[in-house]
Length: 207
Image 1 (cartoon, one colour):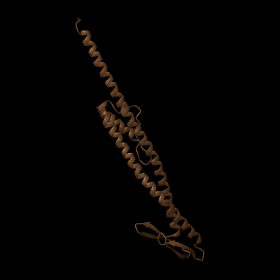
Image 2 (image 1 turned 30 degrees about the vertical axis):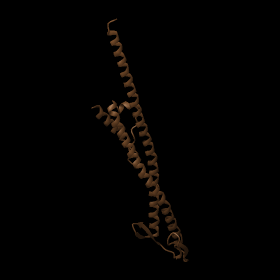
Image 3 (image 1 turned 135 degrees about the vertical axis):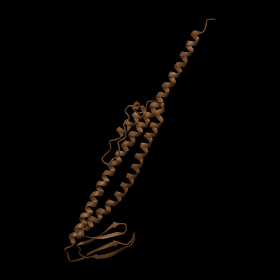
Image 4 (image 1 turned 90 degrees about the vertical axis):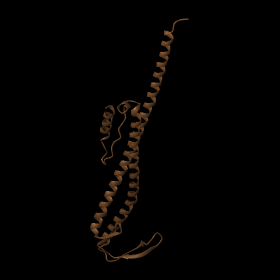
């Protein structure tokens, strides 16, 4: 019954989460709130280590996502800058002379006439045409969404590192509690043996 009560308490403490739903790690102030005897130590340590593994898994996923967003943001910004440049030149009569990349080492010259239509790659080999104003709005919204997502991911990474540290401290406290309790039990056992020997000596008849 005591163990079930402790599990319920653990769940209640773990319920709060950050804005993206990542749960807070339980802060172990008193080990006795989680461990009542030596039998509780191993399951508690296992539970804490599983939580650390989950946090580390989320951390790895977020690190990959941050890397992807950091790669994507400059491309979105560059495309948006190009669209805005073309928008400024759409009322002019002279074409724009430029070069475009055919592959990593090969470029070709091109002339771009004034235009009010833009073709954007959407991914999965899909390209759509947009009026230049709509293209600017779409890219602006994508840039803002990616920037917000990157900020949230970096905030979540900091949060996860804090929770991992909290859980590592919890593991250390439970382990140290177990070491101290074992030492106390051993000392008490030794005292009991010595007390028993003393009584045996007192009870023996004199020579």
